[in-house]
Image (cartoon, rainbow, N blue to C red; front, side):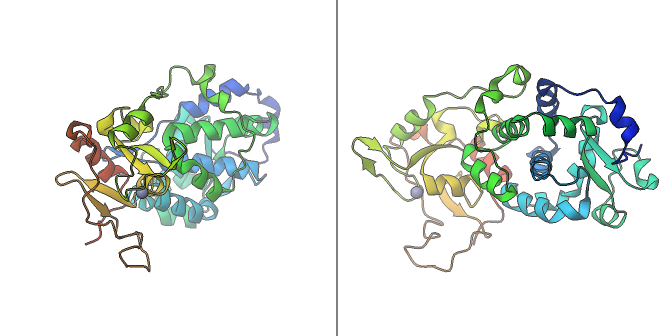
Length: 326
Ligand SMILES: [Zn+2]
């Protein structure tokens, strides 16, 4: 069951994987669902492991070595409480693709357990459990220029709204400059979760809100074009949210970013803006970043274009960093 890091015998027998096989392998990862909520654990751990390959670090990493970064990624980009389950992906990725993607190395007492009997945080730390990509996957990522980057782009695109991509990449120190976006739509991606975006969504949402941020009222135009305004999905497009007005909010770039980070949400009954208790600002004045807390959002021109309760509920339980500020 072990996976010797220096397995020369295995290395000789290894059949190289093609780039398409590698992309298909990553596209088939089954994301976990905790209580029906969105769980970014596996995608964030895979991105972390891709960054390790790019930085030419050892293929297998002890849990204790990746834990601090994984924890901070989950706290920043996951729903409330995700970081408490940071040990799960390290263990459960080992079952994806029949165990051919992710290898775990540790004492036999843990290795021989059923995969469902996940070791706890203390066991993973104290038993020195190591994990990382399989030798085949690792070798293919190293020997095909651009493959690692296209896999990382695909994962970002599948699991996270684009407003968060740059932050995640920066946090990991991943270099995706020059990585081909085209790989996202290639053969390997066919038949998977990818849904086409409706190019008219942004225009319809901005028009519904008369080209004004529904939080702060920002409404600048440069020439005749609205500047710094975006259409945010309330239920993320990556997680089944439709491209319709009642699943959209017109937000300035800043409030879009804060919304996708879960810093605030909109409560359904009175459409008030509610900031998270985790959003903290020294400036408590009327011009401070938290001054919109408790205020009604600026509604769209037509009430039927306003946010639908089911999408707000999805956002509150999946993205918003609960609890709310008092
Ligand atoms: Zn705004």
